[in-house]
Length: 516
Image (tube, rainbow, N blue to C red; front, side, top):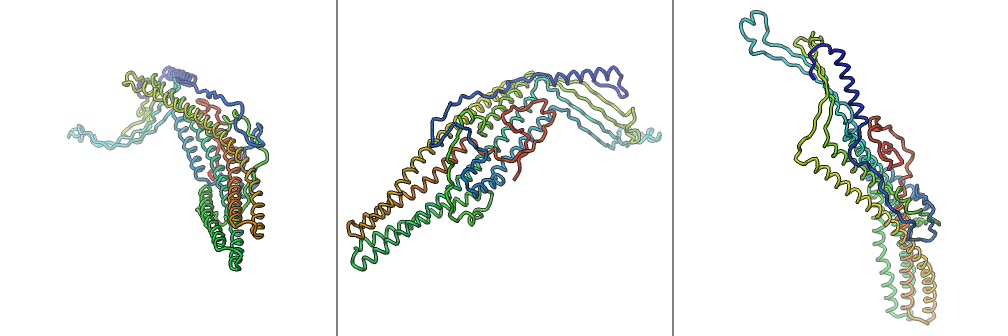
């Protein structure tokens, strides 16, 4: 509707106000097309089929599970990783990206106002006659123009609100991605740490065995020189000691590479932790009790499950965005402007013009593109649902695998402990019998080799028990609750009113995460 320059009549203004209020009310209270998101109902087993000694169905203390190993150095390394890990910082950057995308979506619900200004110096070709020049008319004129243009697309069918809903779910997914990265970072640091202690224990066992074998070889050489032992016994003893010695560099290489891996997790140069971690340290001990909770707890605790749920929510909302394209789009438009060729009269009433009124746009024929887009979004939603189901099943599998591995490794460690004690008695007895001439030296070598093999296996088993326990804590989704209290930011009022995010997360998607 175009209104001539000048003051609008009161009836026109009143009609325009009533129309704007009516359309705004319809936009706020209008329905949102497309399916509403509902949290998937997933059946969980009543109990875990795998079991480990000292296992109970009590809720697992997972907030800072690494403290249960009673190793201050491990605690310090994990906390440094939670502050400095590069994957975590990347996840925090993705959260900022998701919040910015949500802000873009929220902007579509509000009016858009644009200010314009223009200056032109023009000459009217038709004004170049001699008569006009003589009359004082100048063919060159200045033109000053300014104005405001406003457009408000009314979200009568909820397409924009579905877009905000999808963006809000994207923020929730980004929050859960941070939590999942925290779980992974803590578990990886702990795994590398216990692996390092395992290698160091194997090195210590190899060095102790080497010292014993070298002492035995020295005794055999002296006996050979005195004529009480054969050259074969001396060569066999020397070869056994050298074989054990050759294993040590391999273990030391693995230990140093594990230190480098820990440095990377803490965002440090590879050799930065060598001095701190090169010394021997005890293998972190597992807690006496092992409360693991029930399977249904896993659905709300695993961050990757919650992230998959938020992604399903976003995909569901995008269907509504696509369906809204079937319906007409209503907008309120208006503009006001001033133009004059004299700067002093720029703001005069005679220089002003304005227009306002509603507009409608309805796609009649798009060649099937809208229908195809709806089918596209439905297919993406189906993929997100299948990904959610797979994530849930994978979580159950992770816990079951960790429980079985932990239980069996504890049994293996118990048997190896008894085997090592028996091997030590066999070595002592074989040395006594050999010195008394009641057995050959092959029995001594066999007993020493068996002792080393079982001591090395016991060191590996102790490491495996700790790694299996860490894998269980990770599978249970422990670690992300350990962050300090988060400060929240109030979400924009338009977003809160338009599309509140489904409560897939107990922490607001606007919670601030430290950048480290």
